[in-house]
Amino acid sequence: MPKLTVHLYGPVPAKFMDLDLEFDGAFNLEMVERKLFDMFGDNIPKDYRTEDGLFNHQLVISGDAKGKRVGYDEKDISHLGAIWFVVPVGGG
Image (cartoon, rainbow, N blue to C red; front, side):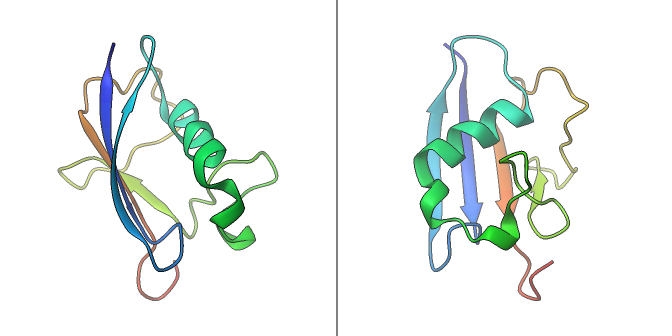
């Protein structure tokens, strides 16, 4: 089972979390975000969400351990090992 370490720094207010998630096979950013919303959706502010139930990437930045942004166009991000979701201090 592929695993991914997720660093949440700001999408859930007043919480900085490091989580290890498991997936049944290859996964992409949307699948990761949907899993996070299943876990923390009630605690994620509406400004940080889109109508589709994903992160608003104008306010929540997603990237890999090297700082490269991760987007929805990537079909399989299981090779990354870790991903960050960060809300900059200024909110976006």
